Image (cartoon, rainbow, N blue to C red):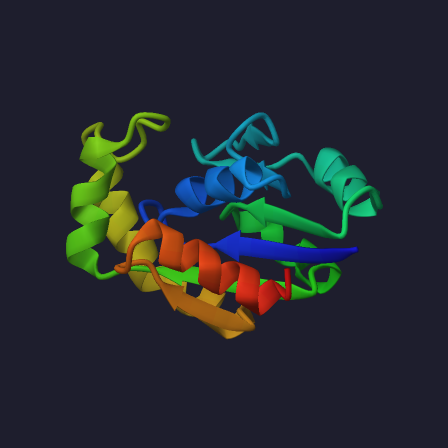
Length: 152
């Protein structure tokens, strides 16, 4: 089974891409949907036991996992591909306001955190990534590129 991590800053379209992959019949997991637990600093982290079991499962040709949490790096060696989804700062500041499935980015201070993470975290993700896709193109094109890179 090929394991593909879709990662990136808040607002880059991880959830949209993972839901589109699921709609096409692929095994696709958004780690924001029950795969995380709160951390003492108010952020969240992957539930390591659950993610470990997910990555151990061999029930599909390809597994797509979307998420961006501090402790994901320990799982990077278990992924065949790490695709960084990225977008310009203008898009990252506008997208949270139009989300329907995730309210992060609307509360005071959350937009500042997104911008801080863009400077501090995205460069680390870029170093770990095997590929990068800019999500300024239509969703269908982003999904097609993900599928192409995954050989699916």
